[in-house]
Length: 94
Image 1: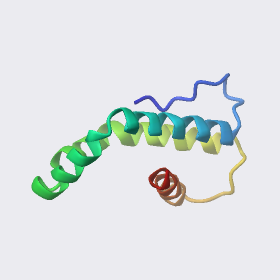
Image 2: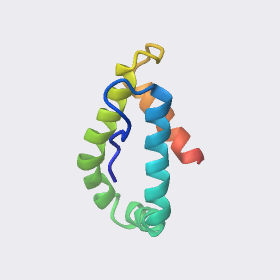
Image 3: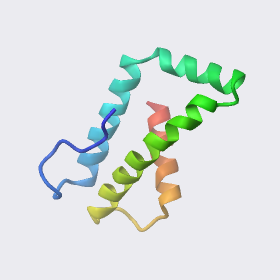
């Protein structure tokens, strides 16, 4: 799953970047819906060994998304942790 914004240049609006990222994440989950069930099993049986290993791939992409959102200058100054938590909550609500 690629979370890079597909719009034009660095002048993208924060809402465009966020909308694009959410669309891509929802599409990826819908395309691989069995992954969530397997991830739940991994958490129960293997103490999240596989899911934890994915963090090395997900965290750099998530940090790039946060960086792009903050670079727009359209967000209130909040910590990265709060912003990341809000984005994850928004995604889980979809």
